[in-house]
Length: 160
Picture 1 (cartoon, rainbow, N blue to C red):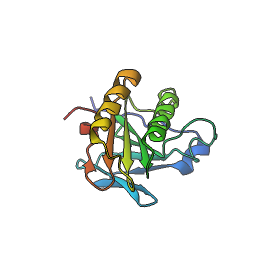
Picture 2: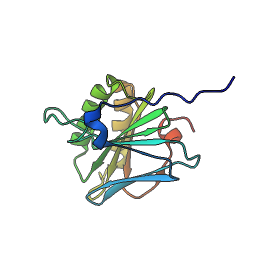
Picture 3: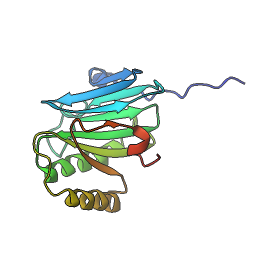
């Protein structure tokens, strides 16, 4: 019996301009000089959702910049931030609450904050923030500096 490809979750038509698909070797997402590159060595389907002010338009509550999905498996809630760690954590946390109830989310969800201009000075504090996020939200959070690494979906999800 032939295996069928899993059916792609489809967003409502009003969100089609906010979602892009790619099977390239990597996917780069950037805003105002801050960026994150996701590796895709197997050329699986990647989904990039411009979440802030496109997919999610209401102005109440925090909104992450993007949600990058890997092959019907993992969604990465991505906040590209110049500074202000506390606000970035609130944005991914609020987005996580909404995204878990969205019908097109993938089975696994992780969060990523990428800093550009002003990386928090106390790197030991970052580990505390990541652990507290996991304990209170039940989801992995990674905080990194822009341009330092190319991200692996499996590594972000703790599967390496």
